[in-house]
Length: 261
Image (cartoon, rainbow, N blue to C red; front, top):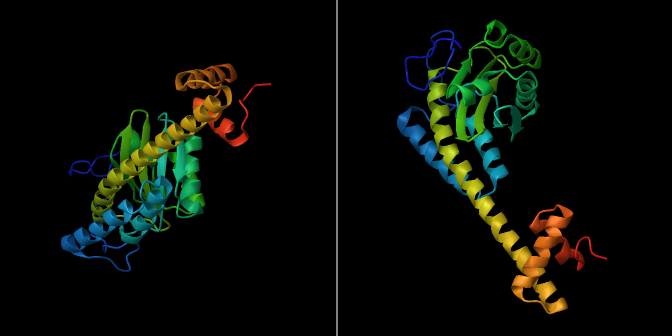
């Protein structure tokens, strides 16, 4: 790893000092100043909350927003790292970020992995002169990504997430890019966690309803009690090596007990 910036939790390995960039996703326009940034982040927070537990929609909103407000950003992806090894691009804004993430997964090296494993923020000023991950950097150049900014989103056990920003020009990201990216990541981490929790809750409620329907079918058909019907479902689940909710789903769809007959 290169030298870290004196500012806490800022990018690891930035090669040189850069002047401030315009506060916008591509340098064309932006909120301008701390007050403007606060207003923008307020809108971002509301937009993320409006997804109502839709994780994929939340991630798409996040990547689109990042390209719009982070200075220098042309492309973006949210990357999940599962088991601290497998890199999975999610909600990529185009082919370029998806391909760069896939290269990191294949080579098991790159700024995204460093961001989630070692440092909260990793900036690459010029892939053509990058020495930390020579194989990855060479492929990134071939793909057309000459600079990048990776910011840790969350850490949940061995599952991690990062916001990855890419540009086709070198030296696209400066300190202001990091400032905006870090604030956006903080809002996004809360929104993604909330969406995941809501999605899990909906799935749990849906599973409970399916099991209840399946129990009702068995109780009516075979004159069983609720406990007896549940025991039938549990036994079929064990015998067929399938999840209880999947057994219940098939029973409610087909009217037949899986594996019976």
